[in-house]
Amino acid sequence: MQYVAVVDTNQKPLMPTTPARARRWVRSGKATPFFKKGVFCVRLNQQPSDSQTQPIVVAVDPGSKREGFTVKSELHTYLNVESHAVDWVKDAVVTRSMMRRGRRNRNTPCRQNRCNRSIGRMPPSTKARWQWKLRIAVVLAKIFPVTHFRVEDIKAHTRGGRRWNKSFSPLQVGKKWFYDELRKLGLLRTNTGWETKELRDQHGLKKSKNKLSEDFSAHCVDSWVMANDEVGGHTKPDNTDVLVIEPIRLHRRQLHRLQFSEGHVRKPYGGTRSEGFSRGSLVRHPKFGFCYVGGATKGCISLHDASTGKRLTQSAKPVETKFLSFNTWRVRSSAA
Image 1 (cartoon, rainbow, N blue to C red):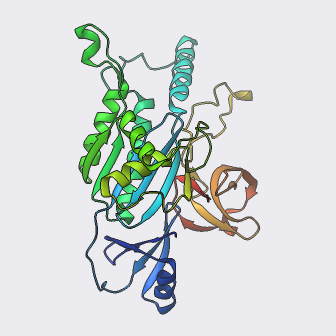
Image 2 (image 1 turned 90 degrees about the vertical axis):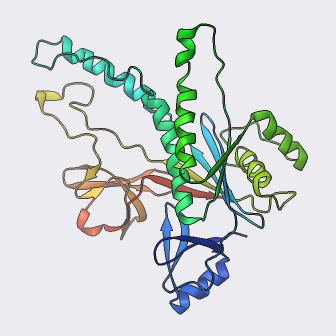
């Protein structure tokens, strides 16, 4: 059974409820429905009869392409999430550097080359990956009364030599930052990969070899066994439905679209605004229905499917488009 997240009038998360009870609350005016990043929730319009909560854990299974999240208490598994990792930043940084070098070699006025400001810091690609994990954890902590976090620890092997070991891996630097941020939200425990495998074997569960599938056994099986080990309560998964989350890529504004335009006329490209709308915003259009905002051209905006990201049109008029909510990722349900 899918459960509905509940918050009070001050946006404080309470224990989730059943869909039937949530419908009664909405019909009677006791609660107001809303979506939080694709997760259906209700907000109470009066003081709750009981504000006591049970321990709830968010377990995280990191990955290079896909990642698993599970929200669970002793009695119920409230949510399984499979997210697409942010994997485009490294190539974007390389392209940006190439275009900067090309502009400096031209016989045109340009600023002098500055020192490398990225030396000694977390690489942008690594930072983006761990920030994406943290954003998901923060959203889950806002709609569920999360008390614990459990993460499968990933390690990078060191090499000999003091100079290398001083900052031997961006992976180690990134996960340390991630762990420090999670400790601000709740108690944190980690376990190794072989410990996760032992937990799977104890429950008779197998992990799929197809890492890109949107199935419970691909990544959420690991996050579920870690969550169940933290709070207990089940011998087999009671909820195998998966909510798939994919970040919307917002392109930065560029001086030119990699090369000069014809006649040296710069075409607008990139940015986060489209004719008054924030890109990624959920909107409703009389023809295309529920979708989100993409780019803009000649006073019109492009609309994309809210679940797949497929572009529906490039000529939607802003006056015909009704804004619903800000958004930075698209979601879809993958039932077991």
